[in-house]
Image 1 (tube, rainbow, N blue to C red):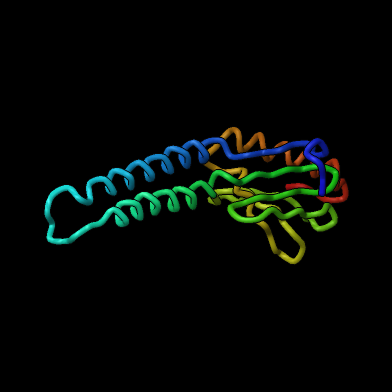
Image 2 (cartoon, rainbow, N blue to C red):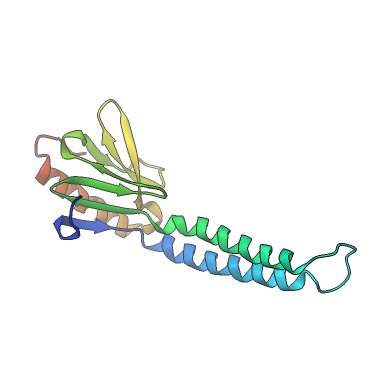
Length: 153
């Protein structure tokens, strides 16, 4: 495994994690509040303490799933390009990289592979605007350094 100091650059989304953290907190708070309110008033349904706890735990689970959207990361170095999206981390070695692109209308960039395959890169998102442009410039310059045989777009 490559050590953290061996990467030339590490990129993460900027705006999405802020939105994700706020959303996760709101979901937990709302589910806890609903859990407390389950026994207030008579609706004809009998709620128990276990139902209240389950409602709060459901909020925590949902918030945990939403927090996965704060994980994306892109690392570029001599070993290749390491892409971490929602689940898992994948290292693409330089011989397997055919290019990097950010097609018009897409939400995030992608690593182009041979045979018209690609891997989405959620760490570089269109919503970040100028930061995304700078990130793509950085990745393309590193691509030119490690794969000078490729003609970048």
